[in-house]
Image (tube, rainbow, N blue to C red; front, side):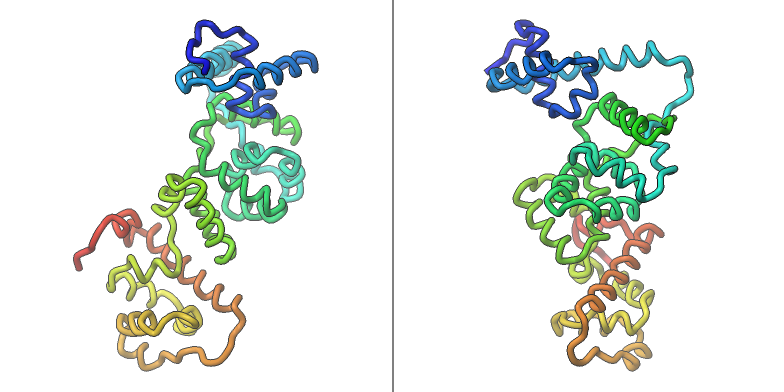
Length: 309
């Protein structure tokens, strides 16, 4: 194992940087390398073996501060820059064309800057396998150095022929990933969460802090919040959403409704399209999220323990 930073050659340091960031991202940072130099770096990566975490940290810090120092020397203005601002000027087709050939890491960093609608539009245009990789990367962006993000923005703005102006950007994380999952088909959402709990349990726990599902509403909402939520949704939508749920859930919902609505409630009989049920349930989840945004409750409080009415 490589454990002495001071004994590393310049080539070994670059090789370690490439192994940490991945070749595509590292090439955006280390400029003007010819094919022979890239081959040498690849060979050094193969021969590096295991590298101690503290050594990796020192390598990242050295390159990071070198990049930042170089960039600050090039700055002629004190105005903050927004490297991803140009994304807002792109059409949907331009945005897809910009990202379709990029790595999942670069796509994830870019999607973290976009609205939920734009994110889903891009995700729906890439393969299922790549979509899974992108979603995992969105939840793990905190380890990407600021300068790497700026370099990615610079590369993309050249492709889009736009001039960026910011350094403010989203870091993604559990909340962004939870928001994206909330826009997905319920079956796909559940499948992804199951895989995430196996592959990255820490990230899965972080996502759960910000995730409201139709089923979880009945587990974590006290009666007063459940009453307010169900009163905020059309009664027919409530009936459709309850289709296929257990009798105990239906009884719980009816129990919190005002007497007048209880008398008007009619359960949905017979077979109905699954998409109609999913749509009704999504409308209730959306209403719950709106209540949270309006300050009616904090999700972390509901998940943190018992409530007192």
